[in-house]
Each structure stands twice: as structure tokens, then as C-alpha cells.
Length: 544
Image (cartoon, rainbow, N blue to C red; front, side, top):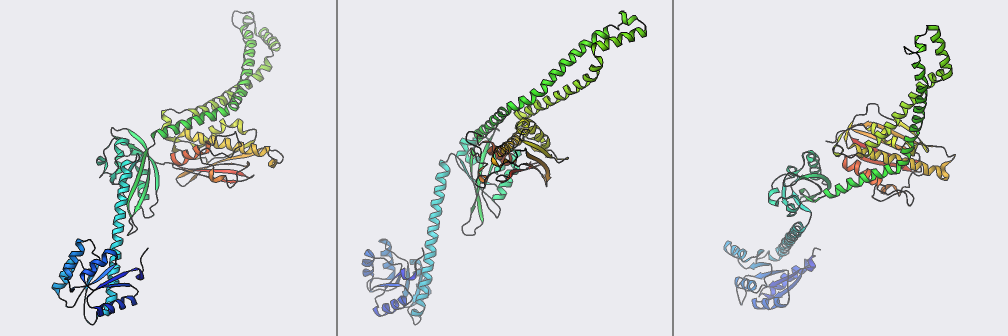
């Protein structure tokens, strides 16, 4: 806290007691505290036990000169800031006093008492500024020392860079994490070490952090290790402001290797996909079993019909009795055989049985194909590809059909010319399946509750559309909805709104991870208790 005038002690050193009294009077009137000694020796003794903020020192004292006194004080480390007072001026005297370290000097003339408070105030302000500068420099030195100790001992890679990404400092952790000595990285741009596919988004984040707004941001991207291998890194970029100008001086980065974490997250997502398939397995088995049952029945009927028809046809082959008879006889045999074998009935039923069999097979194939799309996690699915969102939604709905059909009707509002987007298809399949199953569960819970009314089925509405350079997907249900206090937490890991024993709480956190972090998209939720919930997803058409 800044000192006030009454906190300052001004020590007058002058053998002229009359003049010293007048000086003290004027200083006290201006608000300062004062003290007085009349000789050099008295000053040395006074300073052994007391202190002052500023001395007004007469150039010539009875026992020693001002120069000699200053040297003595300097030797004893008792020297205070001082203003020299002299009875005669001149350039030589002025230079001599300034060499001794005087803050200013005053001439003993008629204007002395009038100018004295102003000069003292100016000197005090200059001393305050110097003290603040010293404190700031010391604090800066300590801060830099703390930063150095932190950076050099941190397991994370600490960096400092210009607003356009030129590396000014890299901590020793670069050797352990990337295989580079800090000197190999300093003076180069961070994007030089970045995977080409991640360079654009890295430049965007650095530009954003280094802009006038200057907000911190975190990015996951790939960094080339020494030896041309890449590792996934997570870096938090933070702007550092100049305390004097308030402008961004540089950007500080804290980076860590998250390759293992991403691998575990990938395993977790795959495990949850398998868990979801396991949960839906009974329903999927039912969806496959129903068509397989009538495929079996129709195939048996077809076999029995063919078994009846083939012997009759055999009779009309050349060399057989009916085959060698005249037309009337052959016609009579055919009529009799047809009556006995119910050929007319078979004629009506066989085409229908074959059509139903083909439809059933198409249904089974579509379910198996959807399961394959959902569960497959080969190398090709670890890179982005162009994906039809409408097709992904249809596949997810097919897998969730048995969960949905008993509690809700599914309504589609699909954009007919929806453009394909660059994405990870298996991840999006997981997102849509999760949201559709959640919607069916929310409706089922409402139907079971007292708010169900007449117990009629609910409604799930799936909508796709184009929004600027993005695709927008909405999945809405008229289920039980959520409380306002629950909504902010639904994307947190292990948080669930379901009853105890139901749900892992992982689902929506992974949905958020896939949409926001992996696809640079956005997911929002609108919900009202006992009215329903709508999830809105926005995905860029071409993130790259």
C-alpha cells in the first residue's frame, strides 16, 4: 500500500539551527514528519538507531564536508536518499553533488522555503517510482525463476512462443516426450512438428489465443517425435499479457502425451459398443428370428410343393406313357394329376411364399449389415471417410427397432439431398444408437408412470437438415424429460439420470467426446420434465 505524506520522515542535517527550524516548519505544514541533527558526527550517531526516508544535507558542516560525510555513510552502509543544500550554486558544484548521488539540490536563497516542499515531493515521488520498479523487477525475477524451476522439473512439456507460434522456450521434457533437445525446437514454428492433417486447426487455435480477445484454449493434435513417429498431444495455450501495455506479449503452452489415454478411450468406446449390442442382443435376435421362422415355413412349403409337381412333370417326358399319348389323353392325365396334387392351390401360394422369403432374407441381411456397420472397428474406420448421415441413422434405428417398436412410433423427416460428411462412421453409429435407445427408455419410463395417461405409445422424431456448411441432426422424444438441475451434468462421465442399477453413465459422455472433440461439432439438449427431450447435433460437412 502506498505511503501517505505523514508516513515520511525528512531528516534535516544543517548546523544553522534557525534555518533548520524554518525548513522543518514548512515541511510539517506540508504534512511530512521531520527530524534534525546539526553535524556530520551527530548524523552518524542518529542513523545507528533511527532512520528517515530522505535527508536534506547541508553541503558544508562544521566537522566535515558533505562529500566526506557521504563517503562515511556509504562505508557504514547508512546512506539514505538525499537532497544537497548549498549556499552557492554553479555548474561545478552541481556536477559534484550529482556524482555523490544527490537526488536534487537546493540553493540557500530567498526562494528556498517556497520551493522546498515541491522539490521534496518530486523527489519522494521519484523514489516511490524507483522502489516500485525495483519491486516489479524483483517480482519478475522471482516469477521467471519459479517458471524456470517449474518448467525444468515438470513432466509436461512447457513452452513459450510468439503470437504466431514461433517457439521461444521449450522445457527439457521435450527430450523425454519427443526425443528432441530443447535447442532443436527453439527458433522454429510449432506447426513444423505437427501432423499435416492437424496443422490447420493448430494454426487456428494459436491465432485465436494470440488475438486481441486472448482467451485460453486446449487442443488435441499429433506431434512428430524424433524418428518420424507421431504421438497424440494435448496442449493448453494461454496468453501472457504485458503488465504495462495490457497487450498479449507471448503464448504459454503446457503439453502432455495423451497417446495412451486416447487408446484407452478408443477401447472404452469399442467396449461400450459391444455392451450396447449385448443389451440389444435379445431384441436383435427376435428381429432376426421372426423372418427366419416364416422363411423356414415357406421353404418347407416350397419343398413339399416341388415334391408334388416334379413326379407329375416326369410323366410327360418322352418315353413315358403320358408323354407318348395323344393330346386329349395327355390333357386328361394332367387334369387328374392336378386335382390330386392340388396344383391350383400351389400355383396361388408358391409365388407369394417365395416373395415373403425374399423379403424376410432382405430384412435379415439389413440387420446383419447394420450390426456389421456398428461393431466393425478395422483400420479403415480409424480414419475419416465420407458418410451418409441418413444411412447411419437408418442402421441405428434398425438395431434399436425392438427397443422402440413396443413403446414408440418412429417418424422421419430426412433431408432428401443431405450431403455426405467427413467423419468416423462407426463413432456416429454409436452416437445415434445411444440417443435412440435413450429416447425409447425415456418414453417407456413415462408410460409406466402415472403421467402416462391412457398408456398409448410415444413418439420419436428424427430430423436431418443442412445448416450453412454443416449438417444438423435432431432426435426428439416425448418421454419423461429431465429436471433443470440434471441437464448441465448429463455429459459428465459416470453421471446418469436413470434409476440405480440402470445405465453406466458413460454413454452421453462418450457421445459428447465423439461429437465435440473428434468431429469439431456441437451437441445441445432441450428438455422439459414430463414433456420430452430433444438432442440437436451439428456436424461440419468437411472439417478439414
